[in-house]
Picture: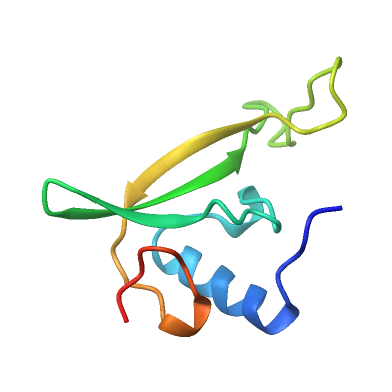
Length: 92
C-alpha cells in the first residue's frame, strides 16, 4: 500500500499546489514523484496527475487495470514550496 502524506503536511501541500494553479484533487495523495526541476533558468513543478473524463470530470479508469489513468505534468513554479514540505528540488 502506498504511503500517504501526513494530514498536516497534506493540507500545506494542497494549499501550495493551489497557489501554483494546480487542483490538488487531481494529484494522487501518494505522489512522491512531485518535484521541482529547472530548465533554461525557469523552475517547473513536475508531478503525476489523474486524467479526468472531459464530460463528467470523473477520474478515468482503465478497464483492464484497477489503477486510475494518470499522466505526467509539468507547470511553471510560481511560488516556491516551504522547506518543511520537503519537495525535491525546492530551495531551502
